Image (cartoon, rainbow, N blue to C red; front, side, top):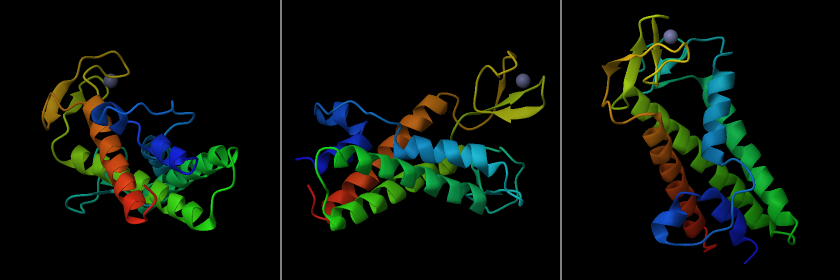
Length: 185
Ligand SMILES: [Zn+2]
C-alpha cells in the first residue's frame, strides 16, 4: 500500500467527506503551495497580469488575475510538493518509475488546476473587498491595516476560507481522477 500513501497526502479534504481515516499530512499540499508560490513570485513578473476570465490587463495583486510567471511558479510549487511526497514515500521502499512519473503529473495538474480554479473564483463570484484606508482591493473583511473593508464585488459569504476549501477539493478531485486513470487505486 506504500505507493498509495503519497496520493492520500494529496487528498486532505476528501478524507472527512469520504469518511476515510488518512495519515496526517507531513507537508503543505500541492494546491496551497502552488497558490503561495504563484502569489509570492507572481508579483515579480515583468508583465502585468491578466484577468483569467476576460484576458484584460489587471493591477498586480488583483484577485482573479494570472500571469505566465505566476502560473510557472505555481507549477514549480506543485512539483516541489510532488517531489516531497515521492521522497517521503521513498522512505518506505522504492516506487516504480511509472508511478513516480504519474505522481509528478498528478501533483502538477492537481496543484495548477486548483490554483486556476482559485483565480477563476477570484475573478467571478468570490467576495472581494475594498479598503478605503489604503485604496486597495483585498480578499479580507478586515484589512491587514486593521480597517474594516466594504464589499466591492462577488458574494459576501464566499470568503477566502471557502475559496481555499473549494480549490483544494478541486485539486484533490483532479489528482484522484488522474490517479484512477493511471490505474493506481
Ligand atoms: Zn487597509
